[in-house]
Image (cartoon, rainbow, N blue to C red; front, side, top):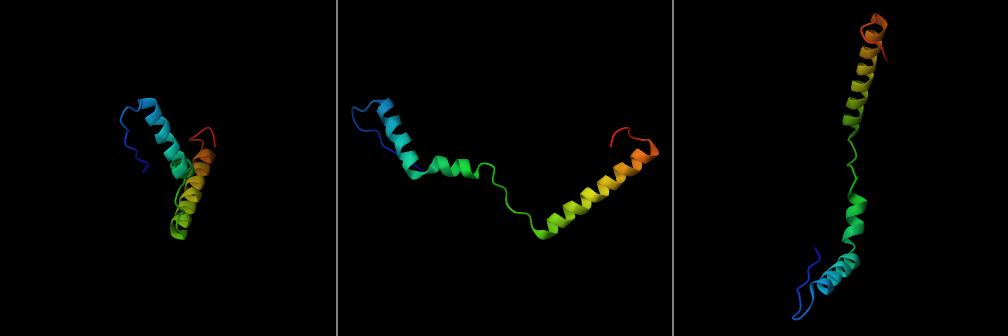
Length: 73
């Protein structure tokens, strides 16, 4: 975390400028932007479980479509 202490007789704009410079030097914004949409990798078990769930749902929709209970696939 970047932190500054305001000097005596320092304007708020110059303090803000020093703070933003310190944030950029620390690389906090670039790291936050990189991690913004990062998702953890799923385990193999969860991948297989999700795949089986998708397949079952697809079969159910196909069955309902063939029976005429739903109009779109």
